Length: 297
Image (cartoon, rainbow, N blue to C red):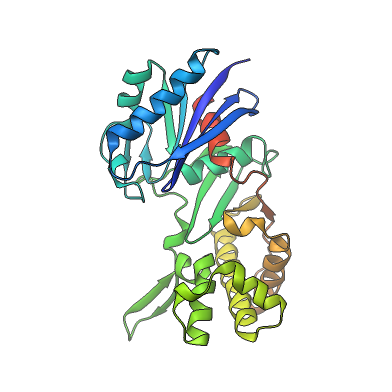
């Protein structure tokens, strides 16, 4: 059985795991993401690799990274919460330090690949993966492979314009109107308080107690989220749209989305297709598993 080491680079921590060719996690851990030092993140990654090398053979290193990842060049373009990883040839540096082959991909794309490999879309070929957290991202799967786009922005659904006012010259994108933070922003507006005074968990708890502002904000959130899903269905017509990110932890997620989709279908009378929405199977481990699938393929 071949074993791989995967790293998932995040703003607060770098997760790592030993994953075999069947997608099984044999061991995992994490270390705090260095704040401003490129050399330090490589030092810590090499230390982890060397530790596992002492008692097992590793076939290679699989990376899940934020930003516009160019696997062919080995460079991470774009921007993220870890600014120093953008620009240097990440793959060449890590390969030289470990003597292992390296494959790298965007974190949202890795999460999607995990669901295609072993998760909610394991029986599908054409899939959209939508990540809903403090922002919205995603990935496009065509014939079980990633569609990256000419600018490596395939699946960046958060940029879709969902609201506009030509006279005022304002627009709001999908991330602004349908991310989990949009709920916080709306409740803060309704109650005339700072967004720092409230959070998503508290809002859902208050909604259970009947708070009208919270109920209104959550209702609008699900409608906007469903509206974007409806549009994506008609853009790509996938077999399934898989939802990941923080919101996927909610048990009633698919039911709430479907309820709003049914309303939209009635409002847009000419439309007939009800999107097939599923929750992701993997949550915190998705990026690691998908990174390995990307390496293998």
